[in-house]
Image (cartoon, rainbow over all chains, first blue to last red; front, side, top):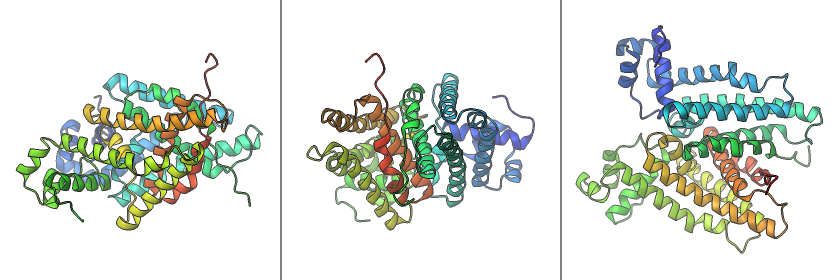
Length: 202
Length: 202
């Protein structure tokens, strides 16, 4: 690993890789400290608990996403429906690169953590929920624009946005279980078919 | 917990509850033995490793599913598209009952395990893959019948079956992260909108 010079950044970098590549419970603080080449005292100075570390890892990843491929995919200069194609492509190439490097498809860090910790850590669950809510709002804006431009028939944009996010996460889940990024390429385009109609009284 | 009399069944019962309610890595063999009231020697007689136990838990759950609500949902006497409604309803009531009892929505045991262990246990990954392949084949049969009966336009039934399974898993993932089974009721019906067209050369 090519590690950052800054101690805190180094811990974050190592923890994110390990949580993503394996799981939250499977990775211990000692292992993180060893790989990041920091003392435990230094670790606890930055992160009083493993939960604090996980919160920072989620923020760090969400921030990278928000300024990285999510920003590119949901670029307002792209026609709305092409943003969805871009997102699927980006997810595919990202997972493929990770698999080519490590031999294993890591999936979505947020989805992984959500299924692992939601029943036993309310703080992390709330954090992951906020990440998903933000992701869903990107789909929502895209759908609103697509309707406005007459590209798709009116629908329940809020519910459909969540349904599209669900589809994205579920598709990555199946791809990870098959350890095959091609699943994303095969199933991905169907994200545009998911739709929830407006309730009759709206 | 109302525990079975048979020792092996008791271990399985406890392990399944704990793996489902928390996670695989978070639950130790000692805790399982304590709750199941068995000695470690007896545990290892039935399950030489934690991986063997997980394999048995997956089989046990898949078997319950196959003879329980999956059998009911995919009953060939039901019109094909109603089977999907039944499946969503069953998933909703199951998750709601679990939440009412424990305060937490446990999600899908297979999805949970798949995201937790797929990068680090090839044996469990292959097992979970087989469970998903079987689930997908139920969707496949349903779609084939729906097309045959003229209820839906022809489509790529194999790919659409996988896409529907992906949607189901992703929707349960989001519901678990919100700790809210109502998400399943809200987003569930859209499973019928997911579709992948036949390739032009088919």
